[in-house]
Image (cartoon, rainbow, N blue to C red; front, side, top):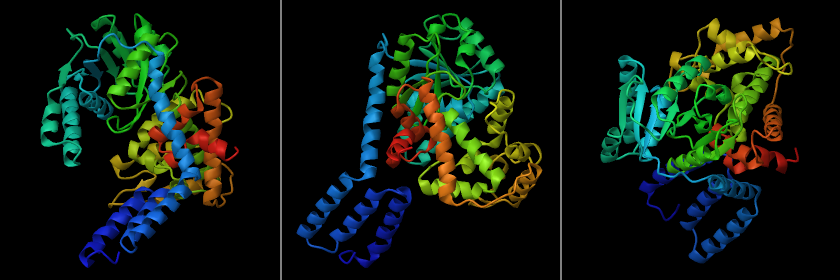
Length: 455
């Protein structure tokens, strides 16, 4: 940095640190930083020769090959919409049932995509909260520099709020985003089917539930499908398009058109518990919980997967989303769990015995009393207790052992999903894991990584 004024050196150093932190594990950004620094300390001919040499080195690297795989997989996913009939008209209007965090985020994404959106709630109090959620997302977009003042103001007009199903205006698509409960969702679709004309596309945002069972509430079930947005829906790029037994090709064509409008990465999924992404996530968490029982701590597991490149570590991610959501799903799965999965009661005990629900209660797997999460003595003590009750002698694990166990669990589940036809192509699973669940893009996706590792 000899050609830089001394006053600029701290600025450059901060920029370097930001790049390296954001691109942890990746080779090319580190090399790019080195070349930028070299440009201030060498003649142009020397710099260009070095740049060419590094380019050729990187072009043949494993990371470059993995990134090319993802590049073409993304374009292949988008082009799949051409396999289905194009919509006869452009989508212009949408109804979102439920204005909680997820529903408000879906509505925001639809509005940004140019649709006029109505958020429906069942009472005035819930409707006021829904409006507050919508306003908060718009305000966050403005404060983070994503939206200008004018864009923020323009987004308030297309998002309307109403109470009840009486005299609903016709819309092109209605998306349900209420609590993850089969009875609640069935009631919503019974009401929507009665209130909206037959051509209206009806979609559920369920994360786990059987959409074929939900479709029984809908006259003309060929217009019904799952649209699984990941949270936060206005930021996450993945959109799982879930095809029910009776979903028509025309309805799938509308779903792909919507994904294009929203600039999402669309992946077609069949029906199973959790579809593609959450089914793999469930196996990932089950394997992590077994490691807890055998002697690992959540902090060791998170660090091991972070060093592998995962953006969403098992336990800090649960704290972000709230353990009450995972708890409800665990309770549902306890009634129908398979015999090959051992139920580990640690999360159950954290919720029921200690009321530790995540960041919302400032405590769960981690403590959140300050700016940064810290390890919890309550959790560590509970791990010892549960292992003792299960007659398991705790042992130590290193990061490679943890990574091996968790990756093997995910890869095995992914291959089952592919074999069952839930996902049609390996690259579909790669995209789901990259864009929805934090698998490192530079490793090529879960199954691409497995193939290159000879697994």
